Image (cartoon, rainbow, N blue to C red):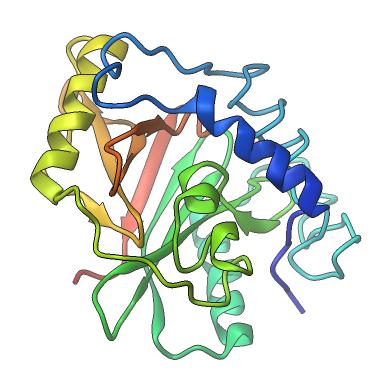
Length: 244
């Protein structure tokens, strides 16, 4: 049985929250901010917020909270995007929440990215990652944990207890403007996608370079801060499964 791989001690999660200060940029400083990126960087794989580092899931997709072994642990080859989708489908069946669905799954060199949404509201719920070798499913770090007012760690319980939060003061057009301002300084020549996926407390947008997906970033729905998702690696492909 695949179960959600929760994070280790709360103290570690709270410590990770302090990294948000250095991992995101306000609209005023977006164009000058450079988030650490790539293997070994503060927000990249192999480090504090990436797979293999402090925030890597201690549980497995099929075991208890302290069990490390995942379904594909002994495989030397990457799992396919279809196998990753099977893992997500199993998670949804075991969660027993008919209101949740998957809207897209993206394959990157470091992980698979999965986006969940609520059928009843049309809002995106939360984001998850899948280890491409073990099949572990776990919450995406960054905005998904620190800014999500309903499903994030600030709501009371990861991926579970709804939290109360006021209406976001940053609208989609402003979020895209802040995101593009950031990208102009961080990755000249790139642009953000026209559509921003709205979550509880923030927006997530694709970053395009030469007309193709290059990466992702999120914009806080209250402050306009920008947080680049530097833990994905190179974009390899995607499947869009549902639209709202």
